[in-house]
Amino acid sequence: MATATETITYEEVRRRKLEENKKKLEELKLGHLTIALREAVSPKTSPAKPLKRKAQSLPGEFVIRRRSDRIANLPEHSYKEEPSFEIIVRPRRIFKRTGLENRVYASDEAREYATEKAEELQSQLDPKHPSFVKPMLISHVTGGFWLGLSKSFCSSHLPKRDTRFTLIDEHDDESETLYLAPKNGLSAGWRGFAIAHELVDGDALVFHLIKSTAFKVYIIRCSGYYSS
Image (cartoon, rainbow, N blue to C red; front, side, top):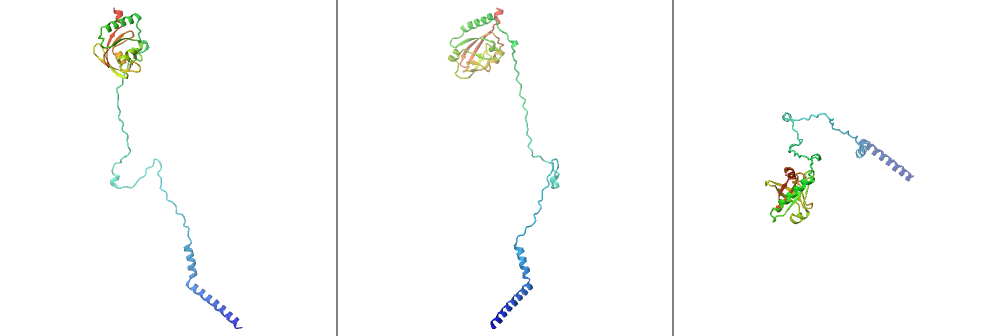
């Protein structure tokens, strides 16, 4: 019996202890504190704040910005680069074109006359300086104005590369032309010489090489055949 009494007494004492502890907890409000701690530790998701967007100005609208009165009264300044243009007026070169209808062909008799006279003149020149006779054709005095020279003469006496030559007429007037060595002929500058001296088909020219890059040029007109 003593053992059962002791057991009942122990259980009773334990129950009473639990009730006293519970009352103390209620008095101290520890239960509410525990719940508050749990809520504080657990993360809370805050509602997303709405983003503030800047108002965009539409095309053609003006945005007025605040600035001081001193700056506002100043004239607007543009920093945009404005290209500057300088107009250069170049003189226009005018060339007289020679059409097919203006071409005049010399007769065989007039051509032969001019060539014979040119050969006679050549025979009177100083033989120390080489020379040759060149009868004029339509292609020499109109159109392309290209003057081909004797290949043997070019190989023996003229430079092996393109060279500027001076043409000197009977009045010692000088004209420049370009000698093209690979093609054995006169190109740039010859057109001006032919036009200035009014050369026509049938005329005969004597080229006298008085210097390494200078020709003395004598002109025999085929028109002299008719006057003779």
